Image 1 (tube, chains in turn yellow, purple):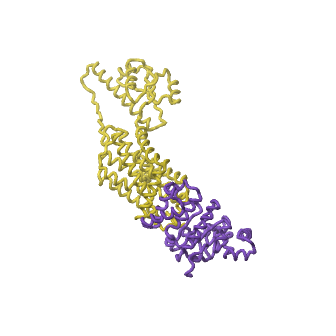
Image 2 (cartoon, one colour):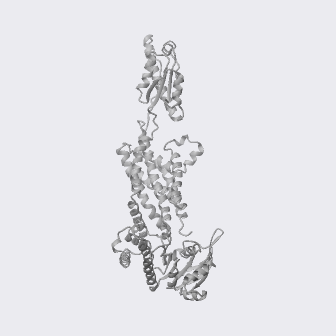
Image 3 (cartoon, one colour):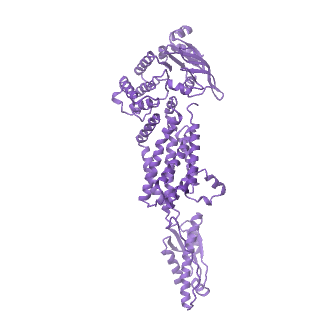
Length: 373
Length: 242
């Protein structure tokens, strides 16, 4: 026990003495949280909108005005011809093109329905889908207005039966993207920093030759590893704390569940990450190698975590793979506890899987750390 | 094991794939002896030493260090030996005092003992003025002396020195050897590798390794007689050139 304290003391001294490392540990993550939470959004805004008005009537102008009024669309240009419009789309100057046909107003009044042509740049399929929904909504609303007017004109008393759906969004009522992203990005911070620090730490001692000196002392493997990893565990918990405070102060993300539960889960989760870091450290000879391998895993873990894309829409085999992704569980737990107020029993499956993962990873790490080669 | 022997190696061999780095070497080192372990670069000295200090498993052969088997009791060996590697291996980003405290701590010395030891050691090395400076800022010679003293912190039975005076000036080398003599006179066995043949003359006995084998082992005086030359340098050249 005393031996471990000596190592912990040494590690903390080295961490806080490393002037190049401190900003990486404490400042970068916070910048990341602030920048990413604002930038990494799936909301589609500022859509470059163009139209070809072949009708030039008050109705067609009113329709364009609806788009202009929407905060999602930036109305760009009235293209005189289709050729010009398509070349603008080719150049990326416009995302959505609305074609208003000849006799749009006349046909609408006469035949009570009409077709509008919409062309959407679908290189980003997800954004195109969202844009399609926006356009449809605006046009439909516009259309209904007209219907009402028409009805009054013809003095009909029967109201058209319109079935309207009123969506109710639970847990994130305003569909605020930050509320959704901040907990996830917090997960990234805690994970990346602890993985990189722990992954590079032991291999660094290998590089500078001090590990050999440690290996000729009678120190026990477990003592050395606990002493080495404990400081990073503390740093991980510290990052979580700072991150949660920022989430509350800057983004006003609700914390519906219990904080101690959040900490309990995170304390086990960090063990998994430290185990992985140490495991990487054991199989590499330079910090550079360790860095690359850590990156490889972080990228896969992040993209398959459900943080940016829902796991439900992944192919079956990929969904199975995510079972082995610790970040997935952390993202789930973070969102469940913070946004849904889930309790201990709700997150128990994730908690157990994470604990098992921690046990296996650290077991492997200790096993693969060899004092004698 | 002979009671007087603190190191006994018999046909100790280490192979890396097809390459035989250490080829069935056998020797003994007596208690309190200064044993010079010579050889050209790549002759297998460091590999042999790593097997003796328990951080590299031999491929074949037997060896006992401080009475413990290198295969099964490597951790017991580690309690009884000190080691100073070729590469400076104290922490550059810790101060002189902190390095002493850390290594004292992991060898299990009590806080009180660490305090006493570090005071004494800093005084002996004349490092009072730099005791709170980072080790990385010290000149190489000072670092090497500090490193040697740290390897003796826990009063080991044997201390292994791998080219301890590489790259230091003649005055510091001299002081270093005075420290080695002092340790030996206090009963510590010293196992030292070096490339300086004048240093080989200071050893009680010397072995010379060529291509993984020990080609000669005796006192410097006998070796010179045997090869009929005036100094160890010529002994070495005769052997190493084949």
